[in-house]
Image (cartoon, rainbow, N blue to C red):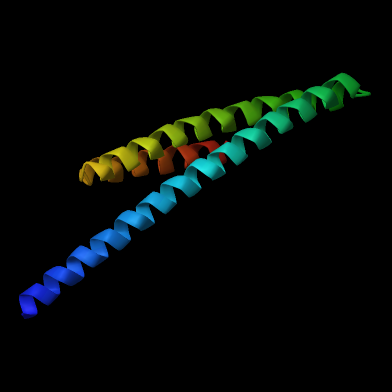
Length: 115
């Protein structure tokens, strides 16, 4: 009976974990869309600021900001792809590759921040 109860607990926790993973994946997709929308808005604002800049110095600052936003968008896009891949690997019960992907992404984010 104790074994049956333990197996029952494991099965229940697996179901809870599956639901939690599904919710996390949905939340990630939602947040990713929000970031993409904000990036597009930011790009438009920067373009408008470049057009309306009154000095070359101000224009240069906005152009630099555009370069930074583009770099950030590239890192975010790569991050999104990695997380989608992690969800796929977890669904297949492959737990080692997600850890390596996560370490790689952390390294890339640190490099971006240190620029």
